[in-house]
Length: 48
Image 1 (tube, rainbow, N blue to C red):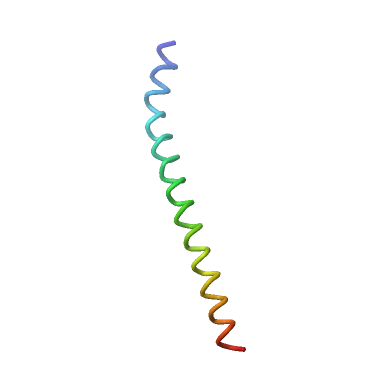
Image 2 (image 1 turned 60 degrees about the horizontal axis):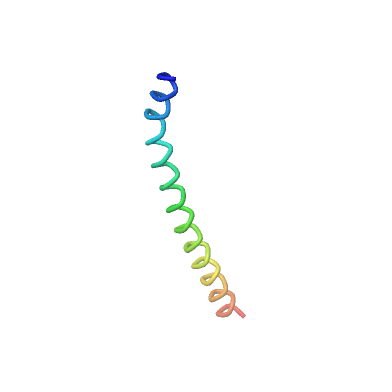
């Protein structure tokens, strides 16, 4: 049981930080994707 507690306390924090960062990055990637789509559409309109 003590080994399990040590394992969770050692890896729990890095897992929590990784999850937090992945969620933040996912939101920023969604915003970037939307912006790129808008840019492509704007460029397509100007080249018609």
